[in-house]
Amino acid sequence: MTEKSTERSFKTQNILIGLLMIFIGILALINPSATNTAVILLLSMGLLIAGISRITNALSDQELKNYKVIGRFISGIIAIIVSLIAVILILINTPLALNLWYFFLAISFLIIGLARIFLGAMTKEYDKWFRIILISVGIVTLILSILIIVVPEIGGLYIVVSLAVSLLLNGFARLLLGLIGE
Image 1 (cartoon, rainbow, N blue to C red):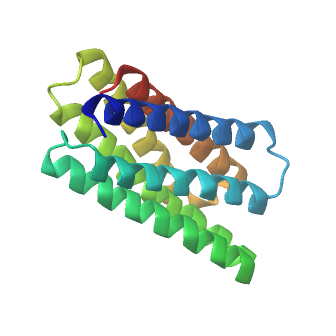
Image 2 (cartoon, rainbow, N blue to C red; image 1 turned 120 degrees about the horizontal axis):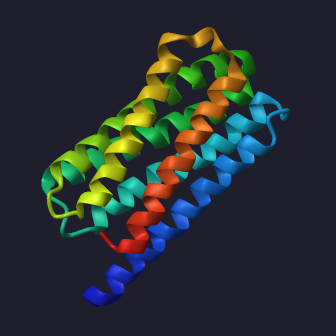
């Protein structure tokens, strides 16, 4: 693969993943009356896709510095593990699965939020406006995840909506990443 085709592939992947994350987040917001189980499965798919994307980006982007590769790879692995555990638990014990899912998903988004903030703060070669977006998306993701951890009794719907918003914001950031090719 030439450098040009690798860059094009990277951009296309980020655009498609971003659009898919946005789509899944919108689906979760449009149909709040769906069972928590169905929404959790949709969000699990989004988290699985985000995890795969983070690992793919970590392994395929030759320009990433070591700390970026490690951060993306670890957060991707965690996202994949959490999404797979949620699906298995839903099949075995739905109430337990939902409670654990909310907690572990909040932890995953906490890590992703921190990774976005770190990426925006540490990557001087990105344009300033893009770094501000990365940091902003990271802060919102971090706040939503902390809120879910601190106030678990806020209920499944609030958690689903909060996480859907986080998926939308992170999908938007991934879409921008693909469009500007950074």
